[in-house]
Image 1 (tube, helix red, strand yellow):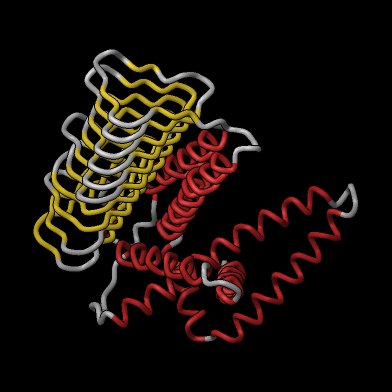
Image 2 (cartoon, rainbow, N blue to C red):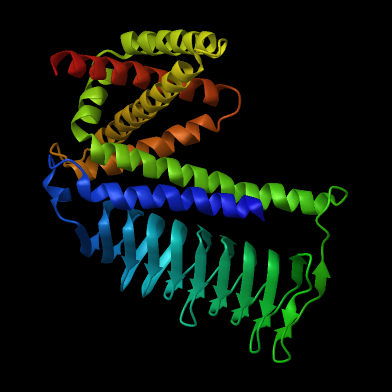
Length: 384
């Protein structure tokens, strides 16, 4: 259960930072001079949206990536939705599949297939419908609507008052199956306390408790595959939020660094590798002595910041390459650069998942971005 709270804490911090910093992004782009971003009409290509308040009221035949303090789908019809925000709400309309991370998530519309969500609180209201499976990680989960597939959830408290056509596989401190709730399949629970099942509730399958201990391999497997999946997803979303924040805060620097990387790939790769090696060696020497520990901590923070800048730089380069392959318009505003940067980061993450060589390729790419970002920072510091 502490893992779930840790996930929610990380997400909450990342999302809160994005909500606070987004309005103060550089005014180099007219797109982000407004705090509110609204998408209307019909669109056939991918949509990248970021702002303090994002509202989608459009028909989108492709994927939607949205980040903001408040992200609302209102009478929208979209394909896959990947969303990060403080408050995320599917108020009405249809989404084919959704991946969401937020402080609060509310589903009152229709998700035609599956949803994966991590938040502090998740609520599927009585109007909400999920056509496939639902996988949730949260502190509190209130399931009042309908799930046509299976429910897998981990939380401190889970309350079910709606209908589940499949099984419910739950990990929680407290589980409440309220009057009127209906679970067609099995109720599988992992909890020290018995689930509170009201007289008016219906469970069509078996009620099974699985002990959470080291001798129970199935419980361990569930913990690794279930909670581990949410932790990985949450860290990935938190990293994407950081990428958005950096691009919003330093759009000029990131654009220049991406140009620097494209123009001098190999020299920046060599500079990045040398920088990592020298910085790592110097940090180790500083930590070897008590007097050098404060300097070692400071240097580690500097390395982390420049590493993040390198990650954003190489993500921008990959995103711009994808954009070039799609033959998108030449002019690109900050919103477009943020969106293509997110797409590039996702591609880089997918490359890193390739066994054996993926991690090496991703590390070298980030090192090259590190070299380009460091060179651009040094140039600006010299001219400041």
